[in-house]
Length: 367
Image 1 (cartoon, rainbow, N blue to C red):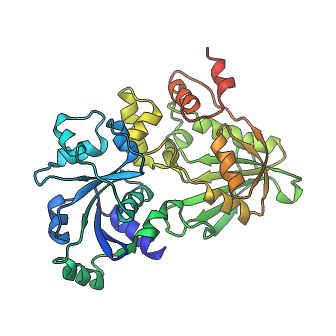
Image 2 (cartoon, rainbow, N blue to C red; image 1 turned 90 degrees about the horizontal axis):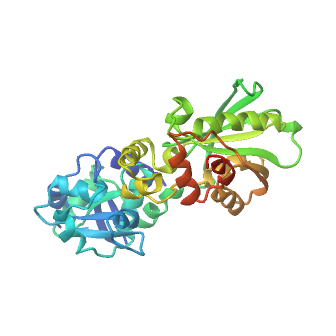
Image 3 (spheres, rainbow, N blue to C red; image 1 turned 180 degrees about the horizontal axis):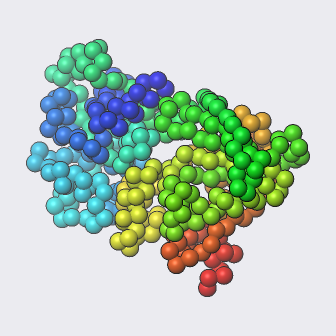
């Protein structure tokens, strides 16, 4: 994990890293930022390709069974064409020839695009295999620390974080408007990128049976600023009040902005939604799936709090499945709604019809 964590920071800084798959080395750099095809080609000794996810390819009309594919790049490919391949809403004729040459990938390329997702960047990677002629230069840069090498299998698995390695860092009593007797417990993931908070409402020693639980993914725009594009802030406050009324429990505030794609990509998706796409299609245009969140961290937090049986406040069946697969007994589910408005109705409809969220009751009142 240590090398993968360092690789994520290098990638976010716009630096290349080396992914090793059985002795075959792939030089990888994020498309987002200042990636240079020519510079990467000179360093690797081979001309690069662009790795895109199946979601991004589907948005361009290309069906793919595998998780990603490789597009060999021409020597005259422009920066505009590269970014068009990765994020453009419409398919430009100039890139059709590139899409005609899609090739399968191996574990190294899959690891590359997985690192991009973990780094909360656009999931598109410029990659080039290291030639024999360039091997000595790469070896020298690895030895000097200018380049970092990670194993392909470690890169492939990085999206799940490090289950079981979550660290309980600090805690304090924080009286809330709707729950004065509350305590915040902060947990940090090993790579340092994400911190999650368990809001313990009431006194655990007084709880009996299944503990009321809400898993709430962070939403800066809704939770803090009261954005009307979603119902997140209202759900958050309703959850605190409901848990207090149920005799106390826990709200897990998870650092998984934008269903796991990060704030930068969520804002990009909002811009695409303003152009007519729904929330699912907008994420797909950027190369992401319907929901990129990982809930193993929630299981780790519950284990640390010695909670094994819960009453879950959610409209999302995936959360129930995730907890149960992690060994948490979900005894019952309670719906949790915000208000439906002209601003968020399209978003909520997409969550219900395409994301499987259980919103029939609240949406039926709008018909």
